[in-house]
Length: 418
Image (cartoon, rainbow, N blue to C red; front, side, top):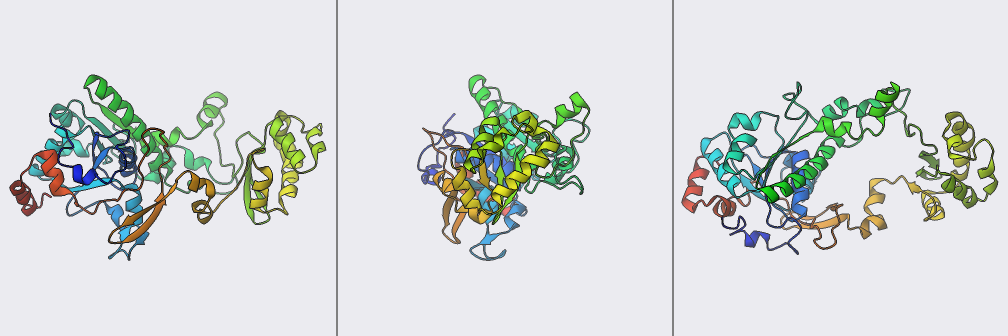
């Protein structure tokens, strides 16, 4: 088989280095976040990712704010750009038989396919995992969904909030005297993204070693459940159903948010070593010798913590700013300012880690977005890529990966397939 990237050299020329996944072709048939973010990470790692959208009904995340370079009509969605960078754009109507046939040709040259439709949707179209594995047995088919490919809930429509609700996390979040509060980000989508990437890479390694691809089945509900720390074993071992605790940890103390002069900080100096260092840092080493609170086990007791530890910390923090407290703690004890997003974007540690990247869009201007958390020493990631316009690279991709002629592509366009 010829190189699947033959003919794409001009499109890939902008990359500074090949990347760890160079040569891997990923077909991304997904929308919004969980699937697109999964394939975006693969793209940052060097894979050639082809974002496939319906020509008349593209990823509706393209309409999500904020917009840069204009408004929702004239600008470009920064939301979409952040989760679809480094991809090539192709349009394809999979409801038409000729569109399915094009996908089958693309699959012969692909290593991975990512989709996040409701289970059964791709099978109904005739291009599900089983059908595509007959065409390319080595294909890694990654399916992200609300409840997974099996089980009684598999066909239920789902969003991030569905996963937070059914995975247990929502019931644990918030304050004891108020209704539960959802986690303030799309943690169900994001958790599924991460497990999707891990599963894809594991299956890809197996496929490369054996020539045998497989289905990677990741559920948002499963993913959220796995983020609930000790909640499951607290119930199965002690029969205790975890409830909202506000900013407190289920048992570790002190380990929460504390008010200071200009906002809030997190302090987690709960070990004997850190507690003694903290007392010395604030000029009161004798506090560490209080017989009621001189061990970690004693400080973990709720009554001791509320009477002795929390009031002491609040007194120490009250007349100091976030910056002053961080400077005082330095490298000694775990104390971090609770930063607003403007502070995070301009944080020197974030800058040192290249976690805010600038990308210039020729027609829309500059965009600052989050970078790539994965740092590889020999094959660095490349987070400064552009997201494609709808179908931007359709012709060259169909020529290179599906062996279609210009005449065939023109016929597909007239038929509305691309």
